[in-house]
Length: 178
Ligand code: ADP
Image (cartoon, helix red, strand yellow):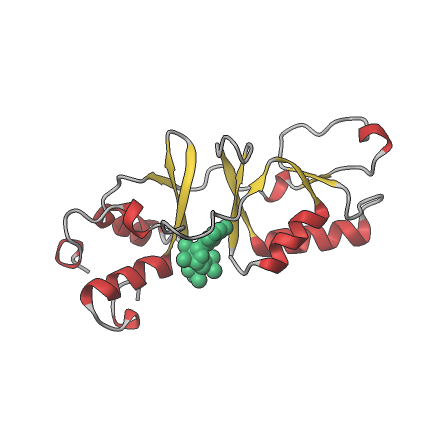
């Protein structure tokens, strides 16, 4: 791959990341405040390989990234083997879990152990030739796009392949990432 040949100089991460302008927002988890049921709903309503975790929907401040398969395994395990975990249990990605159960509610489920606390993130202005280089050199499957620590989008390896195919107008299987 010669990135310079494949990309116009001006293609930036923001041009390739999802969501696109009129797409629904990213599916994200909040670090504290969702229930087991809500997380299960997000898993069954989407097929994404992973979900960014943010401080809150309002701030969109990035906390980390969690893989779908780890979520499924951990929730299934907790539901079957961890005392008191039910649909209404709160899911926490925070460092500290409260020592007392909430006002008589079910105990919370900490999923901190499956949280990747330093997922690779690039800014929305990163040129795609650099982004492709990072993907190749680090063997990434996805990376997050942020601006001042706030989540804007996600780029997967397939997004890059599709974008390159569009630009080169040829089969995505024939280029990059062999
Ligand atoms: P792939 O691109 O390999 O199919 P995914 O299934 O994770 O991987 O992603 C499918 C599409 O959805 C990609 O275009 C990706 O940018 C986007 N995407 C990935 N994760 C999310 C998410 N949590 N919320 C919204 N869109 C996402």
